[in-house]
Image 1 (tube, rainbow, N blue to C red):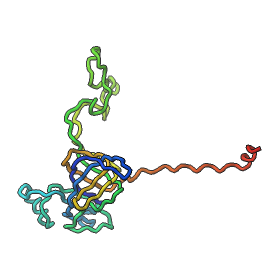
Image 2: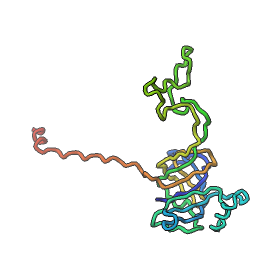
Image 3: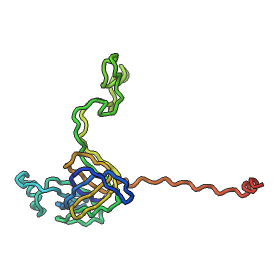
Image 4: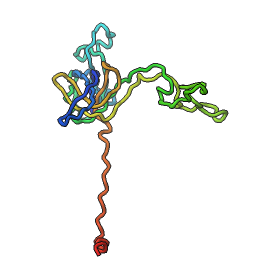
Length: 232
């Protein structure tokens, strides 16, 4: 599995190509991630690396966590995540993972925490149509019927109702890398990504990749006998 990188969402802007076409993009600041731990099959029963991102004051850490960073020989980090690795990957403690792992035109998945919206009704949360807006309707923005009577005598799972909205892990798939800037540790990615400016995001190589293009069936060769009859 490809190793991703941790970064911080800076905000959205737009870029123009040579033809003058505007593309909305999101700028991600991804300072070098440092490998804190390498896990192997013999000891941990699976292969992975643990990486840290964004500096943190050591006095804000508990002693066990501070000791973990000290053992790795790196400064304290605010965010720690784990990526699965394959047999061909060769990482060592202290190695840096930088934005130059990605290339322009590559498709990536971006994972982040969506903006919290608080307690919302079914129209905003589930895009329900709502009820009558005139004086004859007792309710305007509430649910309608949510179930039957004595059979089955309960409300089924996943019934859209009012409740907490947002503040969830979301993955946006198959976004395109527009620019890679190693000098200032920045990635420019097409489209929007989850979360507010300043939030932590994870950028990884797209798992599903680019959508497959349907092959157009070749046209059947003309029948020479029929063609000769048409000419007559």
